Length: 116
Image (cartoon, rainbow, N blue to C red; front, side, top):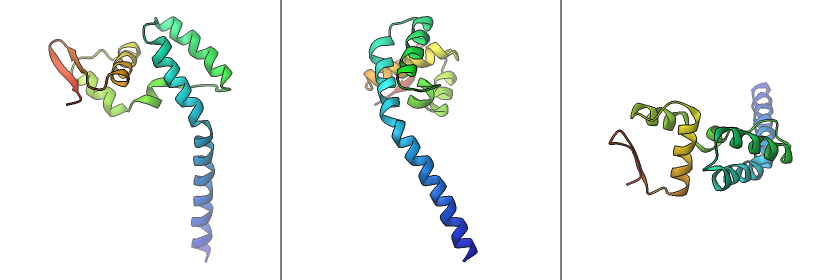
């Protein structure tokens, strides 16, 4: 019986965490969509400035566009084929694939991402 109580307690904790994440998911989606729609051609400084303003409006202390929209595996894949490791290049790749998923990303004449 003790083991059952322990499992139920763990499940309850996980449910609370998931509920909290689901509660903020629409705001995170809104921030990601705004980033793609309005900041895709902006400089790093402008992106940072607007994201700070928008995060304040959503009552977020932090929001990581890349962490929300991409995986570490995807980032490593891009780097493996020559995409610079810096954040701006990765953001631009994620934006490009979000807007046009059928596009191929090419660097140094090597296809690094092909949706086909």
